[in-house]
Length: 138
Image (cartoon, rainbow, N blue to C red; front, side, top):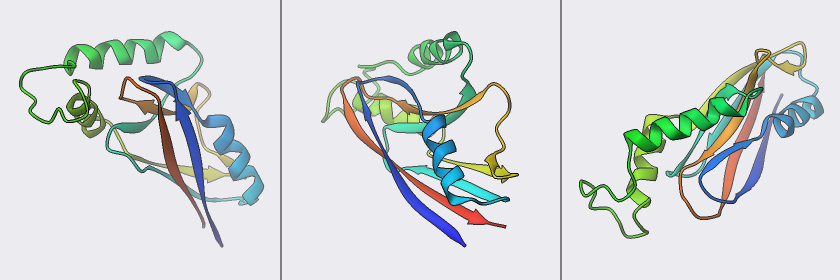
């Protein structure tokens, strides 16, 4: 038995959007004792990460670090059809992850105490993002 779903995330622009609670609820509804939850973001300018969710400084520091690494408007980039943050968003996505796999143990996502699941929006303007969810029973 497995389950497939989709999570729509409206973003207000660049930043982190925690989706842990929505995923915990979805897994709970499936009533799987053991299995695997796979997440896939269907965009080339956003990514998925598992990161500390107790202290907002952790994700703020990640954003500051990647902003220094991949600068908007860098003259190196020629792919600028959608603005100065277009190619940097693609690079940010390439450096991070577009999919995650999380084990399900005892009917719950096997996340650590301080781990949360985030959509990381790399564009500056609001977007509607879509994450495909898949549960596989083991």
